[in-house]
Every structure is written in C-alpha cells, then in structure tokens.
Image (cartoon, rainbow, N blue to C red):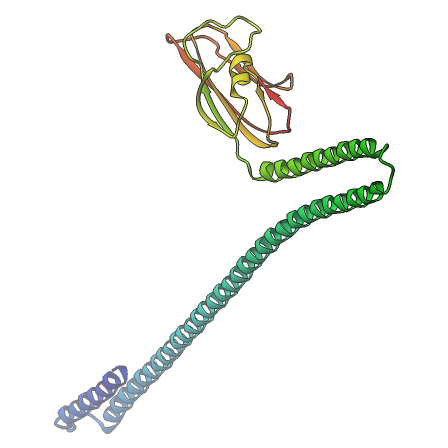
Length: 291
C-alpha cells in the first residue's frame, strides 16, 4: 500500500513539473534561457530530495515490519516450548503418582500377608507343642503299664495331675494368644453423662453414671461406681470432657495415673450456667486410669 502511494506521488510530481514547464513555455519570450534552466534544475533537486526522503521511510518501514515478524515468531516458539514443558512435567507427575500408588498397595499386601503368616506360625507352634506333650505323656503311660500294680494308682494320679497341668498351661497360653489377637483388632469407645444436677465437693471425683455409648468395655459398673476409667485395651485414646457450672472461679482437672493432664478454669460466670470443654489425646496402656 505504501509503495503504491509512493508511485502515485512520483507521477503526481512529474505531472506537476510538466504542467509547470508547459505553462511557462508560453512566457519564454519574457524569460531568459538561464532563468528557465535554473527553475527546472531547482524542481529536479526538490524531486530528488523527496525521493530520498521516501526511500528512507521505506527502509525504516521494512525494518520495523521485519522486527515485528521476528518478535512474533520468537513468542510463538517460546509458547510452544512452554506448553511442551508443561506436558512433560504433567507426564512425570502422573508417572510418579502411579508408581507411588502401586508401591503403597504392594506394601500393604505384604504387611497383611506377613501378619497372617506370623499368627499361623504361633498357632502351629502351640499345636505342635501340645502334640509333643501328648506324645510324651503317652510314652510315659506306656512305660508305667509295665510297673507293678501297687504303684499303678500313684502313677495314674501323677499322670492325671501332669496332664491337667499341661492342658491348663496350654489353655492359658492359647487364651492369651487369642486375647492378643483380639486386642490388636478391638475398638473401645465410651460416652457417659452425669445423671442429674448435683454439687461436687472440692477434691472429689465426678461420677458420670449415665452410660450412653459402650463399645468394647466389659466392666462398666466399676466405672459408674468409682468414676475411674481403667484401660483394658492399650492404644491411642481421644478423651474429652464437657462440664457445666454456675460457680465463679470453679476449677476441674483431668488426671492420668494421678498425674494432672488438663486444668480447666471457669473464671467469672456471666450467665446462670456456663460450659467448659477439655480435649486431649494420649497413649494408654492396660491398667492406666483416667479420672
């Protein structure tokens, strides 16, 4: 478009020059030859100057267009590189996630299989031990059959006592193993409330005798009568207590094995009753007490 305007401008200049020369040819009689040539030369110089100016503008325009095109191409290359980088990063993250998930599943399966095998080995060991003891007793009984009739009753009593002891020991060990297996899978939960409004003296244990939820706790009557929770299943416990009082500066504590864990202060009571909540998490072993 600029080139077309430039050509039109040159044609216009030549037309103007021809018109000027034609208009002046009628007055050659009045002007000298020198004046005419001087005017023509001056117009040519002006024309040449304009040509140089337009040529310079054309060069600047071409350089500007070339620079803009280079920038567009460079931006396109950078955009494509960035998109490809993001895709590669996404593929790497997906691959890592898949590998981590598979590794976690395999680890869980291996751990479960190991525990099952361990319990099976324990049971087999106990059964083998019992079988071996039975064989020993049978052999002892066979030998005693050759003894005299006088010592038969004594040997029979010994055998019975020994057999009963072995069965008792086996039953104790067997029950202990079953209890350990059950304890590893047993869940414990207790929700208890105060049965009615009452006044608790300083230093006394608050009894929550109204049992709302009981999971896995056998001796609930002891807790209701003493106010002490005795752990029967070791593990991590979440313990919370909600107390309502209308006494200014009232304080209540939560103890673990006679060691103070939580202290709750009411301060000044602004209303008829106010509620305070205490929450904590702790590990309990069998026999630990919470009051």
